[in-house]
Amino acid sequence: MPFTRFLPWLLVALASAPPAVAEPGSRLWATGGVTTIEGAAGGGLVPMAVLTGYASDREWGGSVALSHAPLDDYTVDVVAGALNWHNRIEISAARQTLDLDTLGAALNQDDLQQDILGAKLRLTGDVLYSPYGQWSLGVQYKHNRTFTVPDAVGARDVRGTDVYLAGTKVFLAGLFGRNVLVNGVVRGTKANQGGLLGFGGDKNDSYDAVLEGSAGVFIDRQWLVGTEYRQKPDNLGFAREEDGYDLFVAWVPERHLAVTAAWVNLGSIAGLDDQQGAYLSLQGSF
Amino acid sequence: MLRRLSARKTFLIVGLLTMLAGCQSAPPASQDTLYNDLGERHGIARFVKDMLYIVVEDDRIAETFRGVDIASLHRNLTDQICHLANGPCTYNGRSMTEAHAGLGIDETDFNALVEDLILAMEQNQVPVSAQNRLLNRLARLHDQVVRIPEARPTTH
Image 1 (tube, rainbow over the protein chains, first blue to last red):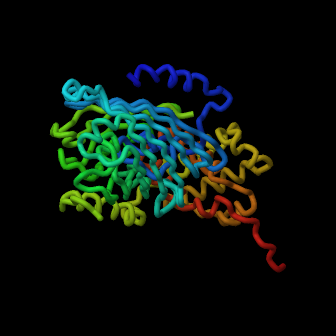
Image 2 (image 1 turned 90 degrees about the vertical axis):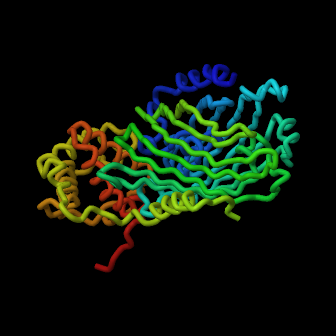
Image 3 (image 1 turned 120 degrees about the horizontal axis):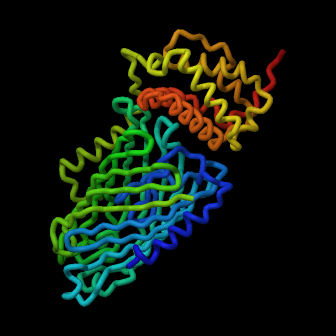
């Protein structure tokens, strides 16, 4: 199971951060977001225009993260890592695993798995200091490693590429003196369930533009509460796909560590309705 | 092609995007108590002093402040923050652009100074809301501080 397999890596990475560079970077606390299930910086389901970690314009940085979400009939696990060069470009990699807890025996398959390589370019702006916020363009190259089941249910491709534009702004003292985070994304995608069920399908095999958004309030500089919404395409005839959403709490006690807990609902997955459950994500930044 | 956008979802998403576009110009103009919440001039002077103590130990930016008349910097910063908070102070220093021209201040320097200010305000128990309101006003100075080219020699 990835969670236990990669935990030692995370601990080694955190422990080996040289004491001379005690801080991972100079950007302010929590401005790197956390790690999404696709590896890019953002929230849990929805990416943001911010770049991972804390590298400012003359620094390098990065993050590693583990995420775990036991839903009603499935379990999501993600291992991800990302690098940030000068707060300009983010390169990320993630492996997503969806354990088929309920369907596994019938399908003779334990899990669905995909790898995601991502890149995000900050086009303009700063999430805190620019009146119009920060804007980034991202691309995610996805490769499904378990295509037998997706193939059988009508998916067309084992690989797919998502492209997205994200705009993110923190309004300082935006609400009752608290800082308010607002984020919007437009994504072009052919992915079924993010790509875990392949790309394109019998019902629709062209790119869809989907909208995603997040909003949150910083209680103080360590605690952020908020919500996310993510549209998904509906390409496969065998089962309808629904949008996902969550309510989250993120705790960033200092730059090295972020812990995110959420209640997530991914809608109907492969015919099993209303898949919801807890989500927990642990991120270390360096 | 936008697929399966129900009215409710469209409302939510458009609302988010509208906030993103429109929220930036909503300063609380009426009943401004920021000056009071920062502890008036005395309170401001105290956290500015603590900030300068943190700055001189901060390897990222200490060099930038080397050789600066600290007493005068302390007075100017205090007056400026007091003025930004609508307090009864007059800032007599140079304009922000003038003061930072040719210094090569980059984002890292700017972030470092903001961080040191926040730490100093926390040391002085400045309420989170007052910190944020001050930061909101200081953030607008970003473009007058970061990467300001050397002033062109004016005719004397």
